[in-house]
Length: 300
Image (cartoon, rainbow, N blue to C red):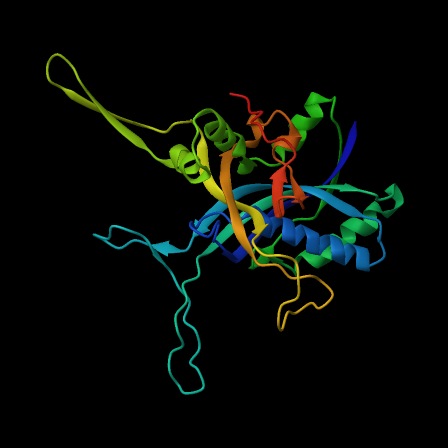
């Protein structure tokens, strides 16, 4: 099957939101990346390409600089905050900690419903709009020109060439399969299943001579991290007082957190393992971002 992608290489972003979940700071949540691509799609549609659709997104991180500080003798890192302007009374306003980061990423977008005659117009619109956008709340400092890539899924070399364009970097994939396995086979709740894969276990062994050797390991190998992947509604659809959009029903929601894994692109065997898209489950009130494949298809 032929698949079509837009490659936006080496976007340098300043002061992006580093709240990767309600509980952790780090790489921006996938909801922010899909939100930026959705905003880009809406801009393209407003400029005349009304049928164009950006269906899935992969993000490769080349460089990441979390704005934290750890002084000499400190046990924990501190967030480097911004100096807010004085309020109307001349006093310093309340300080709200905001985790920020500077980073450089390459974004791969799968698209559909675009005629071959409109590709040049599509790329031109994207190149112009990128400098006016926010990605994860951060400002775009620089970006290279967008490229159009056509891939035959049966051509292994073509897939490798796409993955090579994402190097050197790490792509974020979803690993909720690990949590599901723990919950079903080990009878654990979601929180314990999550923490079970994040904790580091230290063990000691003693040989016949009395020498003690310490080892540290996790339950599963790999660079596993907690990530926010969407929201679950906790109230019925309705109308809220002073809501900004009166044409859309309102619902209170809480964040959904699961496991993700950072992997080098060359280890990806199936593109669907790193491509994220929106998923709505109205029966369970879930509004999620998730990969097209949920099991790991990574090579050693």
